[in-house]
Structures are given as C-alpha cells and as structure tokens.
Amino acid sequence: MSNPGTSSTPQAKLNPNGAGAAAVLAAGIGSFLVAVFAILADKVAPIKSLMNFYKPTGPLSGVTTCAIVLWLAVWALLHWRWSWRNVAVGRVTAAAFILLFLGLLLTFPPLADLF
Amino acid sequence: MEITVRGLWTMIHGMGFGALYLMACSGALVELYRRYRSPLGPEIKVDDERFLRIYLTAMAVLAWLTVLTGAYIIYPWYRAVPPPGTADLAAFPQRLLMSSPSTAALHSIGMEWKEHVAWLVPISITMAAVVFSQYRRSLRIHPELRAAVLGFVWASLLAAGIAGFFGAMLNKNAPVAGGPIIHVVQGEQK
Image 1 (cartoon, rainbow over the protein chains, first blue to last red):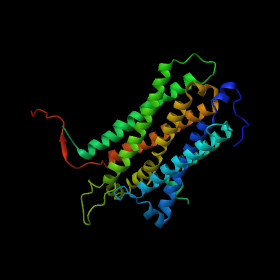
Image 2 (tube, each protein chain N blue to C red):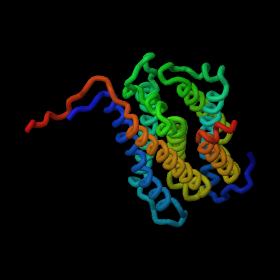
Image 3 (cartoon, helix red, strand yellow):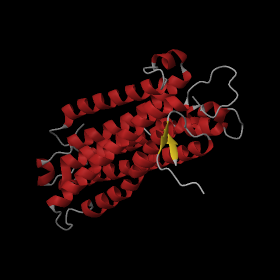
C-alpha cells in the first residue's frame, strides 16, 4: 500500500506506521474470521466435523483455533511486508474497523442464521 | 460454606478473569485517551509508560485466560450430553436450558453469541498491547494508529460485556455445577 494520508513529520518517518497498521488490519481480519468460521461450521456439515479438533469442546475448538492461527499468520505476513515503511494507515484502519464490525455482527446468531 | 469444582472454575473464569478484564478496560481507555491524544501534550514519564505497557499486557493475558478456561474447561461441562432417559438435567446446563421454551433462547442466542464473540476480545487487546509497546509515546504522532488502538479496546469492552452479560444470565438459569465438593468454611450450627 502506498503513502497518501500518512503522517509526514520527521518523527513519523523515523518510526514508520507499517508495523502498527499490520497489527491493526490483522486484528480486523482475525475478528472477521472468527465469525466466518463459526458460520461455516454451523451451516456446512463436513466443515462442522472437520472443526471438531477437541471433542469435549466440539466445533468451537476448530473454529477458534483456525481463526487464531490464520490471524497470526496474516499478522506475520503483513508485518514482514510493511514493518519498515509508512502505509496509508487511515484506509487500513477503516478496513480493520469494518471487518471488526462485521465480526461483531456476524457472530450474533439471528444474523448468522440468515446465511 | 462449600463449592463444587465446576462452580469454582466458573467463578474463576467469570468473576476472576472476565470481570477483572471488564474493570481494567476503563482504565486503559482513560489512559490511552488522556495521555496520547496530542503530540503537544504534557511529557509522559517513562514509569507511566512502562505501567501502561504492563497494564495492557496483563489485560491481554486476562483475556486469553478467560476464553481458554471458558472454551476448554467450562464449555465441555456446559454442553455435556446426558445419558438417555435422564430426568434430572441439572448437571447438563445446555440440555436444561433447551428443555424449556422460556430458557431455550439463552442457549440458542446467548451461549451461541457468547462463545464466539468472546474471542474478539483477546484478538483486539493483544493487538492494542503490541502496538502500544511498539510505539509508546510516538502514538501521539500517529493519530490513526492511536484511534485504532482505542477503537479496538472499545470493541473488546463491548464484546467482553456481551459475553459477561450472557455468562451471568446462563449461570443464573442453568449453572455449571457438579464434581467434587470443596468445603471453604465450616460454619457453626445453631
């Protein structure tokens, strides 16, 4: 992602926002993934049985483990790509908030049941 | 006074880790807002900054402990399946709730929402703790990052509030109880 909308102070250049932006976007993606995996495990029988990582906890174990592992993987990847540069953090933050909001909404069962 | 092992774990999960997290949220929000809102604000002491870093890290640890104890210790007891023909469902909270139309929604909406939305809390607060630890006072010159950290801490408060509210409702209507009994205090009989 390029630089428009980033802070241009000397301090901001010395301490680029990329690492922070990577963490923020990854958190948004992770939150959204929790909801996506929860819906998939609820609606698709083969995925439900695949998500049964730990029998006493049931599919919740797979749903959350997959979301957490992917969140951390996305975070590591974005950090590797962005950590030494300034990115358009306003846009990144907006995307992260949208994903977080969707994550909050889609974990609400009556909304998840619409799919 | 006595408590069952399952009841004790439920207390540790909800009133220990969960409630402590909820209370800690307000402190984090105030500190992040007050001290880091302007690059021209008063000088931030190194000790204060270290304190907030440790505070946010402790919140992240609390959030992870809450979801992990919830999902891997208490939830299996909650969703246990009774043997066929079981009449007393007290030891099977999910089945007990679903056996009555007046409480079924506590499982189908309350627990179903709680068990997933709670995981947004450790994700959000871990990010906030890491970003704060990395940027510290330079968050003042990255207002978008500061806003993102604040926003995610707010979201974690909301998600933890939802999980906590339904946790309390579920525990009121179908408590997770059973297992060995721990005698806490022996009272005098009159």
